[in-house]
Image (cartoon, rainbow, N blue to C red; front, side):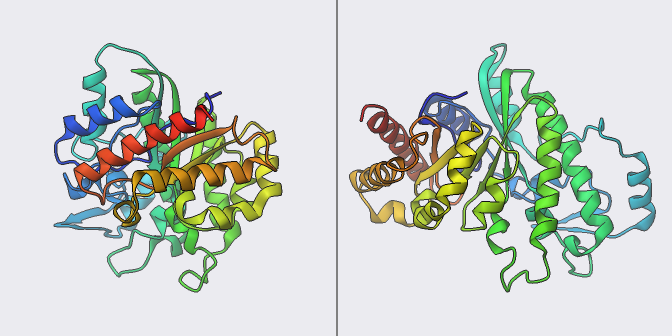
Length: 331
C-alpha cells in the first residue's frame, strides 16, 4: 500500500501565512495533507473547526459551545441521512482550500485529510450549562452523525484533486478515557463511536488512520478495522511495544504503524538532530527484531501536530523527518 517509511503529517501547522504552510507540506512530505492553522484563526482549533452547522452552535470570541434548542435538534435529526454533506467553509479551514488552489488542475496520487474523532469532540465541546455533550445521549449521537456528514463532504472535496484519500481520525482524548478524569466514560462506548465512524469512512474506499498522541489501551485500538495507527513514538514507544502480540496481528492484516518519532514538544529544542535520529533508529531496530513486518509496514510522522511550535521549528521537524527516512531506508 505504501513504500516503507513513507512520511506524512498530523495536521496543525504554526503558520499565519497560509501559502507558506502549504508549500512546506508539499516540499517535505511524501503524502501531503491540508494544514490546520490555529494561530491563523480560532476557528481552526481542532474542536471549533468541525462545529460549523451543528444545531445550536455558538461562537463567542474564542469560546465555542452548544446553546441547546430542542426544536433545532429534533429538526436536524429528522433530516439526517447517511448521504448528508456538511461542508467545512474556508472560514474554518483556509488551509484546505489553499491547498486545493495550489495544486490547481493536478491530480495527486495520494492525499491525507483529518477530522476530530467523536470521542474527543464530545468530551471537549460543552453546552450552555457547561456540561460536556458526551453525557447527553442525544447530542452524543447527533455529534457522530454530524462528523459523518463533515467527513463525507471532505472526502468528496479531496477526491477532486487526489486519486486516493487517507483520513486520520484525531482522538487525543483517548489517553484519558477510563482514567479518573473521565471515570464515567465507558471504554466500550468510546470504541463504539470510533468503530462507527471508521466503518463509515471505509465505505467510501478510503484508508483510515487513528491518531492518539498519548498512551491508551492500544489493544482496543489495534483491534479496530483501521489501516493506520498513528502515535507519539518519541514519548510512548516503551509503553506501546508492550502490545507486541496485538501489533503483530495488526501488521498481519496489512495494518501500518505511523511512528511519531520527531518530537513537537520542548524535547525538540533540548536535543540535537543526531540525537533525535539516533533514538528513532535504535527504537526501530529494537522492535523490528521481533516484528519483522515493521520495516515494511511503517510510516513516519511528527509526534503530533506542529501548531504549537514556531515556524522555524516546524521547518526543522520537516527536515528531520526527511533525514530519518533517508537513514532508515538506507540502513
